[in-house]
Amino acid sequence: MKLELDGVSFPLAHFDLDVTARLSSITTGIFGPSGAGKTSLLEAIAGLRRPRRGRIVLDDRVFDDGDVHVPARHRRIGYVPQENALFPHMSVLRNIRYGAADAPVYECVRVVEIEHLLARRVTTLSGGEQKRVALARALVTAPRLLLLDEPLAGLDRALHGRILDYLRRIRDELRVAMLYVTHDPEELAGIAEETVVLERGRVVAVGKTAEVAGRPIISPGGP
Amino acid sequence: MSAAEWHVVAFTLRVAALSTLLIAPLGVGVAWLLARYRWPGKSLVETVVTLPLVLPPVATGLLLLKLVGRRGPLGQLLDRAGVDVVFTWRAVVLAMMAMSFPLLVRGCRVAFEEVNVRFEQVARTLGASDWRVFLTITVPLALRGIVGGLVLAFARAIGEFGATIVVAGNIPGRTRTLALAIYDDVQLGHDDAAFRLLGVAAAIAFVALWTSEAVLRRRGAPR
Image (cartoon, rainbow over all chains, first blue to last red; front, side):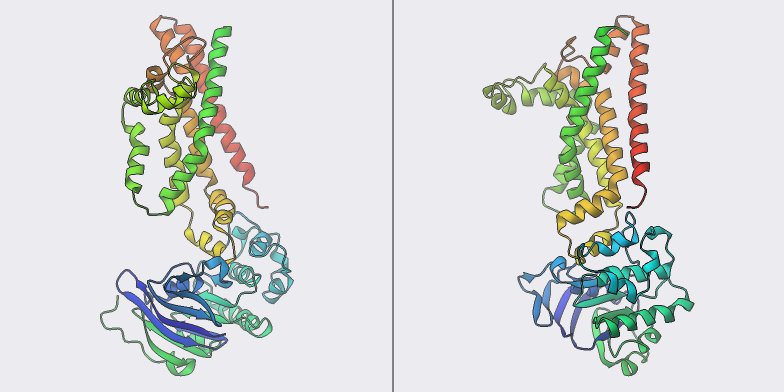
């Protein structure tokens, strides 16, 4: 995976996001305090929000650059929002099939071990089950990159290790590249090789996770 | 009930159903545009759509009369095409459409606004076109409100009086609706007949509401 973010900028509520970074690890952490612009950056990479300026290039495919804006549906970038956004009016299987009616779903179902949940209503699932279904649904489209927004938020501490195990399996068995957004540096230690630190819309550090994610964050005047 | 009364009831149901059917696509479309997008002229459209709700119905009838009367801008075109509107069943439908349109748009707009955009965003990252997102995510999740809006519009059409009497008159066998017939009966002191029709009007409202509830309950199961 090679992701180029070159001066990607747009206004947020209290400041402008302006991100430049070149990422090439299979798993990259994006770390920063709440309100640093992490989710907005994911939305831009997914194609859900058009930057006012800047370039987004993934594996030599230009997604955003001046007049170029490839819509989300043509990017093949998987997106798992913090709240999962499982379609509440569909069964688990229909959720998973949404992105590819004819593609085989078995691999994606197996890797997160949800074979036994397929006929269930998504509203009856536990938080951890919902997260695994959301992951499978995103994986069915064979994404070039998987965007994970705070994948452990709202889950029991006891579940964190299991979900991280599933993410490692996705990385190692399906070889899917991931961007992992979090405000908790501890989560990144076990999964991301490289980490980008974001503060008030700007990249303040990039490097090996162990080196950058542990350092204290000082954000003068931050919200 | 007399044959003439049955005729009034059947006629009212027919024109109200036709009116609701005719405004449904445009009403749902306008509601969706108002709920999801910002565009130039939006507040003007909002105002025009709401106008019949705040104007006296008789005034709305007068505006319609000026619009589709022989010398009105639309009336001239229709006259050339050989279509009579004023004081015909078409005028009844037109009055019902104008008066129930705001209720349909309001109901649907609220329903669309309550659909979390995350569902639509995720659907797009899964490769769905705008149309597919609308039909498989937005409409099903807003269905309760859309059906509610349609039922309300239909009920409003059944009860329409002020605009109808101006633009369509109260011609027995041709433009007399349930509401106009009740008015006539009251004026002529035929209280028994008025109460019979009142009972029918209440029954129609009850059946419409009950049917829509039943339909929505059945749709609740996952597929």
